[in-house]
Structure formats: C-alpha cells, structure tokens
Image 1 (spheres, one colour):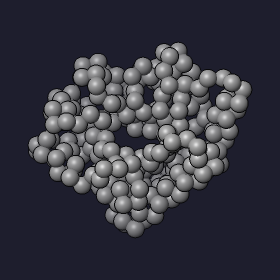
Image 2 (spheres, rainbow, N blue to C red):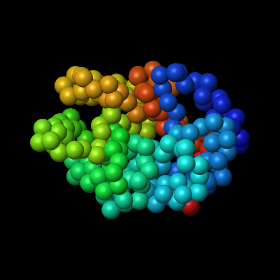
Image 3 (tube, helix red, strand yellow):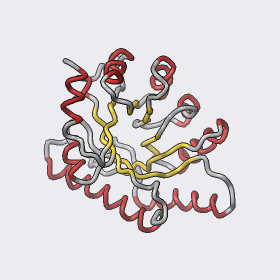
Image 4 (cartoon, helix red, strand yellow):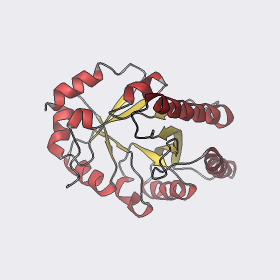
Length: 228
C-alpha cells in the first residue's frame, strides 16, 4: 500500500467544489506524515484523546476535523485547536462546545449531524431537533450574548449497504435538510455552505449529490487498525 499513490488517485476524482478529509482515525502519526508530505492538510479523527495526541506531535498547519460522536467530557481536549466539529447531534453538546470555546477565546465551526440512515446505532438530529437547536442560537444572538460556535452546515452518514440508490436517496435527504435550513435561517449567511457526506465506499455518489466535504479513510490508509 502506498498512501501517496492512493491519495493522488482519489484527488483526481474530487472536483474543485469539494474538499477531501483524510480520515486518519486509528492510524499512526507516521501514516499521517506520509499523507502530509503528499500535500494533504485536512485530517479527520473520531476520538478526542487520539486527536489531541496527534496534534501535539504533527505539523501545526494541519486542519483537524472531529468527525465522530463527541463525548461532552472530552470537548476540552480538542477545543483549543480543532478546525471543525462535524458531529453536533444535540443542543446540550452545542452548548458545552460553546462554553469551552469561550474559555479559550475561540469561535469553532460546527456542523449539525442529521440522522439519515436506517441504522438506529447512528447518531444525529431530525429536523425538529435541529430547529430547536437553532432557536437557542437565535435567542443567544437576540440577547446580545456572544457565541463561540458558528454553524456552517450539515453532516450525515448513509446506511452501510450495497444498495447504491438507497445511499443516494439518503444523501439527497441530507441535501434537502441543508436547503431547508439555508432558506429559513441562513439565507444571509455565506458561511453556511458545508455538506459533509460521503466516505470511502460512497464518496463519489455523495459528490454527485452535492457534498462539499468527503471523509475518506480506508481508501487512503488501508483498513483501520481497531487494536490501537
């Protein structure tokens, strides 16, 4: 396996309107360094402590994206440096991220994670929950309280299935959720522009359905090492 060659081949399939996040979870810093040497700067992790440890040893111009379920007691480990949190799946989590970001004087970009798959094990909001979350954001803004989070788009994970049309439909649903929020809450906000969807097995479908951020791991780094 050659990480640089894998990366080059995938980059050929990524259009200019989409950014590639190399999902480096469970992979050693050496593998990330190889991708970094090939020009990759966006990396995704799903465990806060693992991300913190890698951030401490790797180049500081890496843009770290947290893509997994974020435990509220682990926010403090990544909040000083994380570029984007893709997995805001509750109002309570957003409020905690906001509070921790305020402590370190940062405004952190966040995506609202929607539940678009048939699997109950996946996390995510429905539209009602997303609107309740955005009502809190609007309330804070109307009260003149500064926010240390910035909602910049949506994220979703499709069902793990070989049914490509089902996956396509789930991605279309996520895009529809984005469009609804954009028109109702963010029409005047250019920063609300991200749709994070698509992984190694389905990212090309996701791109066809409007993804702006694809999260590709095994196609770059090989199978994950869950023994780490």
